[in-house]
Image 1 (cartoon, helix red, strand yellow):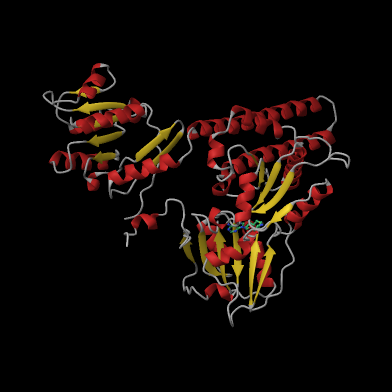
Image 2 (image 1 turned 135 degrees about the horizontal axis):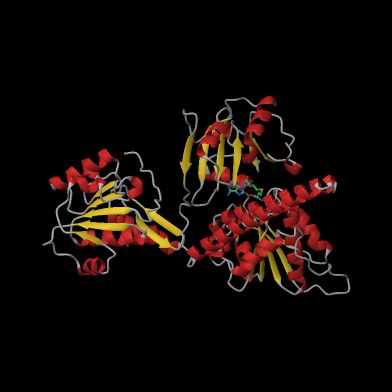
Amino acid sequence: MAPALLTAIDSTSHVHLIVGSNPLAGARCSRSLEVGAKPILIAPEDATLHYGLVKRIDEGEVLWLKREFKESDLSSLGRAEVDRVVDAVFVTVGGKQNLSTNISSLCRRLRIPVNVVDAPNLCSFTLLSTHSDGPLQIGVTTSGKGCKLSARIRREIAASLPPNLGDAVDRLGTIRRRIWEEDHAVELFQDLEIEDEDVGQSATFNKLITMESVEAARGRRIRWLAQICEYWPLRRLAAISDADVEALLRNYTCSHPTKFDRPTTSNTTPSGQIILAGSGPGNPDLLTRAAYKAIQSADLILADKLVPSAILDLVPRRATVHIARKFPGNADKAQDELLELGLHGLKSGKVVVRIKQGDPYIYGRGGEEYAFFHSHGYTPTVLPGITSALSAPLFAAIPATHRSVADQILICTGTGRQGAAPDLPEYVSSRTVVFLMALHRLSSLVHSLQVKGYPVGLPCAVVERASCPDQRVIRTTLEHVCAAVEEEGSRPPGLLILGTACTVLHQYHQKWVVEEGFTLQNVAVEGDLATLAAPAA
Ligand code: SAH
């Protein structure tokens, strides 16, 4: 069976027909009222109704038509604006009755969504097991395989969410709206200026600059918001406060970073400690013990957006976490801001831990950061991390070197300085090449590789979110990799692996294959199911 199309229907003022009188009919009426619809109950006068339902009828919330169902009900009880056709029908009398079958086929003919209890074949839609928290709604369906199970899954999902997420969704919605409104106000203002100009002031040059910088600021704020939503740990997002909202808006209205004291001069004694630590590819079990201890000892954590929340979850409560506001076009500014924050912390005697995804010295600007702190009198302790460049191939079951297949491995970037195309390495058939930061410009990279002589049939793999629960591996060839990524969508961060090593442990004959998920076998994780399941010897 194909999966159903899940949708959210605005049911305000809709007319829902509920046929039947059992407790389920009461539950359906309540659900209709919750979503702003008007329930009409059809049940004979002598029916025994649940106490709660009687109360709702008495209070006028539910209209009870004390009679049997009539075919004409479907097209006479609805809203005037839709020619009196009702918006949905819920039959609660069960699928075995002729009445249910009859109503179901009438509804289908009139294209009225119909749901019959315990009769999936008579339903044109089913209700989801839902969790609501303000504007945030989560719905689960098992496609009719078990409603108890879907309720359980829904509960587990809801329980795993941080508290107040609904409020946060509201707040973030407010930010979006405010950014939009402010940008819109700027537009109006520009229009006025242009009118002024028509009156005789010629300031075309100035106007151009204004437009450009407004445009730039506009893009920056919206991108920053998108980045927050994508990369901040959910716990942090859920705790977003009005003050945070103000700070976000302010910081990107005036486009200079927060200023701190001047750098330390030689006559002040540095007292803080700075540790540059690699976090590994993402899974907290892949942190080194040294990095873990550093995180535990931190007063101030400076992280990149790539550092996943599972790692930030290890940060002790007393420590402050700052996540770099890096996104295309803002990388340098965000980096300066982060370094200044670090310096400020060091001067006030803090243990500052700069966490970098993977290994700090592999495409992590670790060297620059070392030099910066060193030049201000603080010598960083640098802790290595497992780099994604070497671990992602492993987690994708690709041995980067393999006897008589690949005897060298090259790590390179798919993006040159300022986003330009990088110099590409020559094709060597016995080499495995790993491209970081490449997927956002994959098609031009693949084109350049082919021009450089890389064969179209060369096996390759795209590994995304390596070592995280949502790891995905796409195995393909240079010829099909762009189509594959376009069709499967992107799940950053990800990298590209090229070379015959890709097919050592996995053969495939399709244009591409996709593998989802990650398991760290034989590693005891928190609440390890294996230990629960294993019978005592
Ligand atoms: N210092 C990092 C690399 C930073 S550059 C390291 O050693 O891993 C950022 C790039 O790393 C991303 O564009 C992506 O190509 C890659 N990357 C980082 N984490 C990854 C992961 N978990 N899975 C796949 N690629 C990852």
